Length: 66
Image 1: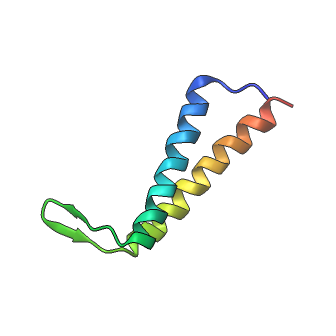
Image 2: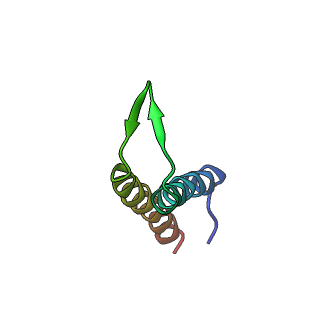
Image 3: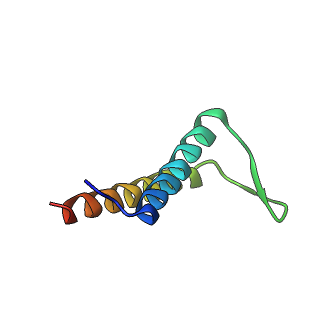
């Protein structure tokens, strides 16, 4: 399976974002944007969306090479 460099970087970044959302959930990290506290439950959606996108890019890339 040969992936283009941009595809590898995209998968890595999306997976990293997903992991960071999980860490935020378990460690209770606070995030403030412009003075507004972002609730922890937002990270559930961030984890799911970024994880699914990373999987979809990986799956599409691996199927094209077959």
